[in-house]
Image (cartoon, rainbow, N blue to C red; front, side):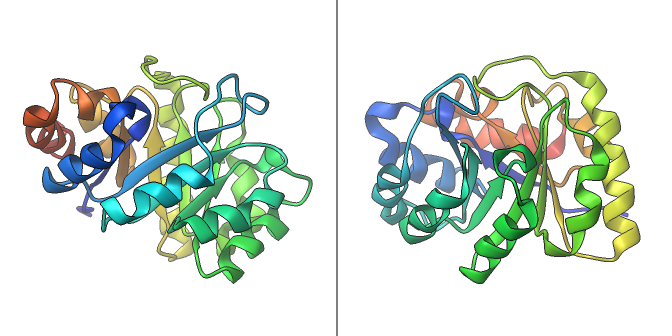
Length: 221
């Protein structure tokens, strides 16, 4: 079955001095989603942005905001990101004691709910909550920093999740984040992913290169 592939540029690799312009540029270049990495310096070893920045960026793009919360505890901050304009909120099962409650909180807020699996997180963590998911994110690097090389063994996890999603009959996006480039995008797509997060591979070369970068990722070539 041929699946439409969506590209979600990660603003972690954008020029932070002009983020609004960067969002407009990648949207014009064909981005399907805007991926926003939120890190707290505790759950992951880096500190990025908070809900006020998401709110400030919201008027600059009509694309869905795909907000990946790498924070713990995560539940207290979900309402702030809902208010800021997130469309999809993805959390980690390790970021709170009751992942089902967390996913319910996101969905009851009218947003799509995602679950992210780190390289050391087993596939079967999704099984009890599959019915509460709109997206599964497979981290193909250990989260915390952009520009890392993909851990190729994680593509087995993508394949296993694709089988689970297809068998469930549910419409659940399967997203991959970490070291995705034009050179390995075809492998990632073949493994079953239908959303590719790409930071460096999107933003390399400046705005004049964004459309070509995105087209190469989408084509997997």
